[in-house]
Image (cartoon, rainbow, N blue to C red; front, top):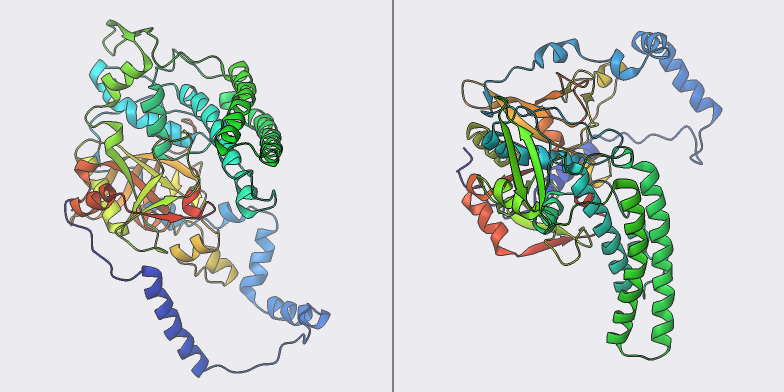
Length: 496
């Protein structure tokens, strides 16, 4: 399934949808009954409310809903028993090695780093026969924060001529050092700094509780950006060369980023340098002692490059707004200045499913990005598009398509996790997926979630796979390098 070429589209899926909507509109207009509004000036009048209330009190369903839902949470009350019963944590295809423990990002937004390290630990644990092992998420978190600070200030230098209230400047100064990230950002970090076991660089209070640290760093960086803007204005007013302007601004920027480094090392700790050796001792599942000595970069090369180098994997996305079989990037999105950009190949949802099934059958876990807050139950570990019966209770229709949700900011990638199993029917079609989350073992089935195929179609936006598992036509799109650049505020720029 995963080896079949992706279908080539000559038109955008959103164009097809627009044509369908236009046809529906023509049909609706033909039967349209022109009616006068109850309020000529558009305000909500007393008579309008009275009319609505009269209709509500005469509807038994609405009366029952009012009786019940004023005293209970709507999600738990309207959970479908049918869905909960059907969404069992049983799968007929799982990866051939179970890792542990279930990780916990706690009060931070580091899910993408947890998903990355949860994927990378598979070959390490298999090679060393470990029963429990975690890579240091905090190590990558430190270097990501420091580099995002530098990235933001470089953008501030680059666009110092724009007004402070320009849309781009306003966007960049929003969540400027987000905990979130994307796969390509993780690749940048691993290739630049390597990886280390968690025992070498353990969690700190502020890696697990990042809010106070983020607030302080954002405050300083916004101040830093204004300092650089004012310096830029002064330098250009003095008619010095552009090379002198940029050189002077970067020298000042380095002084400012040093302040961020001081804050990060005080709150997260001083990480081991990427090219200096550390010594790690461990005990395998049989109780045998082991020791590894080397640098973080050597640790990554030794273990994280098998069976495929991390740089050989890339993102497939399903974004129905845009043309399929195209390569996309998001302007101004990154973490390490001058490094690999965030890249996505857009394709049909069936191609994402096929690659997932192919990887699971080969024993390879799958990094994926989704909108986890939609139609999901954190306690039960269920992600099911039919989980809540809102339409039945309120007599409404939830009619947004996946493309609609992206267009009106109703949905985006908010969370990254790992698929480690899939349940197939007799025709090899996926019914549900086993998901390894990073919310601790108290959520779901000891930390694992079940995701239905219908939920996958609606709320999964991204999977990451090595080139070996991706259809050749899509690999060629990726390797072409011909990118469509989306604006910085596009929903595909959301950081999981």
